[in-house]
Image (cartoon, rainbow, N blue to C red; front, side):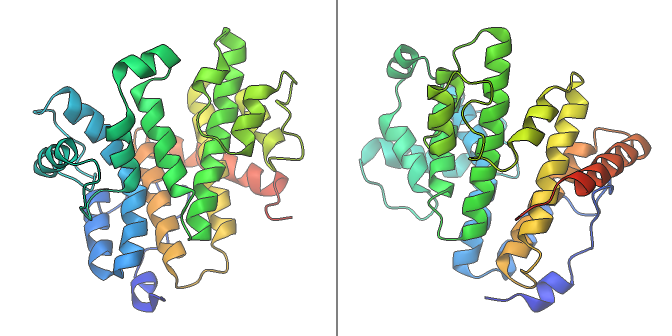
Length: 276
């Protein structure tokens, strides 16, 4: 389905934009009103990462303050957790399958015995769910992020002496290879296109600079992978992901943040060719 009017009406945001006129909650609600049911489901899957945080907070404290951008409210969680407690196979359109699986299979004792946190287990299930999507853009975006996160995690584990097998999540080819390899490049040369760049970014000692470089890489990926998606849902999903990045960059001053990111993105565009 094409969204000519909707996409034409979206602001032309740039990487150096450090402010936005609309909140993420307002943006989500406006988009959901205009998307088809199947495309709205894709958008909700993006925002489910906030539901993951909210579910863990709710299970720990029923009165916890939840992130407002999540798809589900405290009342929703009260109803859904009760439903999942009552039924092994609850039927409710609000529940993504991975949430049901998490609730039915996790136990603090089992996870502790395996050295896996509830957060990592839920995140693993979330990425697996997203990577099953029939939408190629969404599948590739989640796998791209999973690979970057796992490489950065593996590097940190080696540096600080942690067991990376417990902290690398997911079961795709890159994750499995990282767990099994003792090579300097984790056995990923030729497997992950952006390996060299991620390894260079990991050498950055300044944590803020490192995060900005990772975001610049992700922004460039979004631009490249939606270049030929003019009026489809992929363009909308990429817009939302970019807006999330801008929200994070608001913690920086407008002047400093704009300069840092403009310089980083410029250098990336010079040195990185996507899709070749």
